[in-house]
Length: 382
Image (cartoon, rainbow, N blue to C red):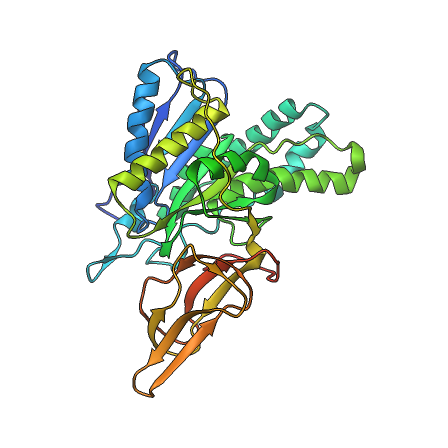
């Protein structure tokens, strides 16, 4: 294993922050086969992924020592030292940069616009060659970026580590939730084994959900370029592989940080890497369990919101099946003596809900994954 510390610049006087990556490869150090990139806690107050990485490192150490590596695996256990250092009144501010209000998981570069002019004429019928051309263009674009801020340097560093990966897993968590993940729909066939091994309760599929999140800035250019070339050249357009399965894995809720859960999740991720061929099996091929639930469109996810300020009493738990019209929560205003029930318009799986028990009018209470698309535009929360 090789450890690399990446300095974030520019920074304030007297400060020095780094992103640390751990690189596992075949015994000759040159790597080979596929590359997987995993990072944790890009939203720095979402901690389950850090503990999962701790357990996954042990499994990878053993695999590397046993000569089982068949590809390259890069781990970044602490993806956001900027957010991790932000605190106010004994709390962490890990989702947004305090100086600018920018979400740490938004605003990543649009590779399609950046690389299309330089690659379009060089693409042909060989999908493997096209993959190399596109990745080289991505790398050149990233290398040419001169970050003006520490946050921009963080984005460049993470993008640089992940842009040539075949598999990217961005480990997050929700507030109170069951295990779920986000994936762009062209990659669902590649993602399904991961969903099976992790035992996810909900998989939310979209194409360009908005916000330029970390995972989609890596997975999106491949299918977007394929569609662009199909429109311009027709059925005989160059073959563009879906070469970067990038997903966001939501490891339940913020309080779900314990060794038993983390060790189980780490083992599932490790087994997925074995299934993909990045690590040789131990003589027993990985068996895929049944899929717990079929994927649903992110555009069918209903965000239930508070009708007025008050104390929230939830009537349903994460993981519950909700029918259209079911009451999910009650918002109580003790001054006015009002208790208002909040009902789901559509049925589905209640996969996440708020952590706070006092809300203002319009605050998000819970999310229900339904099968019927009804939303358009930016599908991600701020």
